[in-house]
Amino acid sequence: MPGQPAKRFCFVTLFPEQMMTLAEFGVVGRAAGRGLLDFDAIDPREFAEDVHRTVDDRPYGGGPGMVMKIEPLRRAITTARGRLPSGSPCVVMSAQGRLLDQGLAAELAEFPGLIVVAGRYEGPDERLIELEAQYEVSVGDYVLSGGELPALTLVDAVARLVPGVLGDAESAVQDSFAKGLLDCPHYTRPEEYEGHAVPAVLMSGDHGAIRRWRMKQSLGRTWLRRRDLLERLELDKEQRKLLEEFIAESGADATG
Image (tube, rainbow, N blue to C red):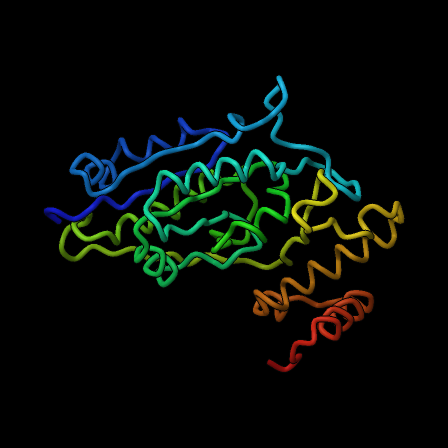
């Protein structure tokens, strides 16, 4: 709309060139050209402290894959906050997050700007989400190579709701989910960050205890965030016991 400030988006991503293509094509690109939308991207490698610009490390507790380190990611987010209007939340794309739908897109469209973190590998150190994320968002129950495409999907869905971006009667609908449990939290170095410590079990070397902890967290997260997924699964005896333990330990109402 004439005279309205641009809705501003800043991606935190290892592939900034990929994200900036959103401003070059289609409805969103035309809106950016008219000054309704503004896009920026920050590479956390710029904030790594070693000569190799390292942004990932091995996970505590073992297992496949790598985890994104908290320090360079958090510095990138801090830089992004300085470029966006006050009140712009940080959104981390995550398979464990709230499912993106039109209602969430409309909610995010009310903010003056968005920081959108697109992770890679096994995702970011869990403490980044605890300390920085106002929203943790998933685009569906499937696995992609990284968070870039989900981040572009979210921003496209939000950008379409900015006044003046679309024609009169256009709309969009997102609806996609499948069976499965949500993932457990992941951690990497440092062992402690601003008073937030890695769970001791992940450093115990007890692989049986680590497996049970991860399964309990996975079941518990699914119960807390996506009970509809649990309703489709047939849990075995161990899984039922671990879920019961999680519910008891959380103090939540199991019937709620």
